[in-house]
Image 1 (tube, one colour):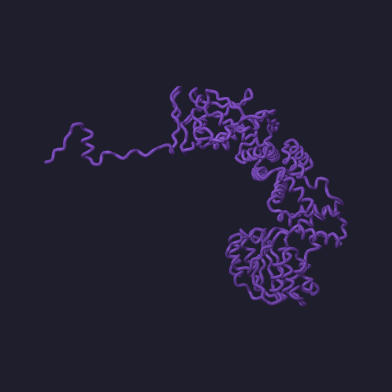
Image 2 (tube, rainbow, N blue to C red):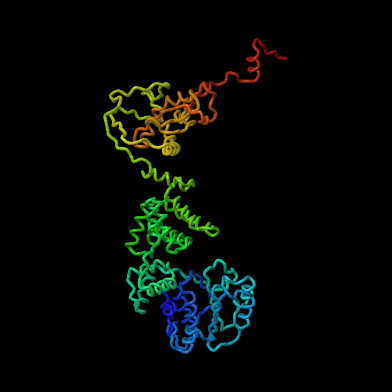
Length: 554
């Protein structure tokens, strides 16, 4: 006998043998047993989930000479002929290659003809490939077929099926098989076929099958023929590990090894996206991953190392690259560029990359200098406040003066003044922290005065803050201690400020000319109501305006 592929040898022959589609097969078996079979069905779902096999089982159950509780006996003449593909009661049509109106008219014209069995079953595969004219030719017969005819339409893309066809059928949606069910199926097939495949190889086959029973059996067939699993059965794990370590060189080397081994760049990119999705689900919804426990632990560890922002950006970046590869002369270049951007966010100016850089700074993994060691020494530190202190009477003290502490309280509290043994933050880190955190914690007066400048560098152990003129500089110097205190709290180290006049610093909005007097900001809480008007009528207003005027009554 010629060798037959595993997915053909072990095709289910009864409703009970269909794995992972229990609600569907239960409904069909009950319909056959109780004589409530519909005239048309629509089976939709991914490839390899049992749509065509279930349609053939339904045809056998309808024409079986000795049905058992809605199941075919698989021994009578009708069941044997249907299994062999020689039955006149079952007609299969591939709509992908017979999608014209002539093929559909021929089907419709033959539908009324009799057949040896009780039911004549038409199985139309990939029905979404039918042309508009062919679909319209099928509509009338599909709505009112002859009494002995049953249509079973199968498709992998139900969105493309005409709504008028859907409305004339009972629609059943087939699902991908969970990893546990797929593993049980492979173990049963491996035992029945005597393949002697190692358990760890079965786990790899489950991963490659991706929920499709036919795909998994094809991979199992390949593994059994090779005698072992390829050494690079999981080619994307090294690349994902390189992304977790932000190691662009390791990622590029791994890609080069796979490409040299014959892997297609597009397929490799798709495999990386699939692996990243598994990592994403491992941290967001473990129940959707469908992998062994040890594999789940590895995915969770990769998710922790990579971080949610970087993980989402990686999937988006590789997804965009995968789309662009359709017209790229060298898809490998797009993959390598995408990997470098993911490993080095500073090489990517997209908002997602900037968000990842900020998130890494917040987690203390910004890639800059390490956090400096801190040594404490006694000192007196005054903590600035955005709210003016009030005196015992409840009113704020005059500007420029500090209210004395209440009787019995200490004037200052000894604290620990940090002595930095490391380096200061970089200019980029200062700029990010200034706009996102520090500026909002300053008082209104300090925000107004510092709002028109920017950080221009770090020199001489100080962060250089550039302003446009000397008057602006003197105003900033008055509130510089407050800004330094807020920066120190944010970075966990003192950050001395040096306010300098920089020629190319853009002046703040509505800034006066150099050497002009800068008005102090007005606090609306200090405003008072104007006194009531002394003029109560227009006549009084005229008399007040013209001194010496008199009112002459006529």
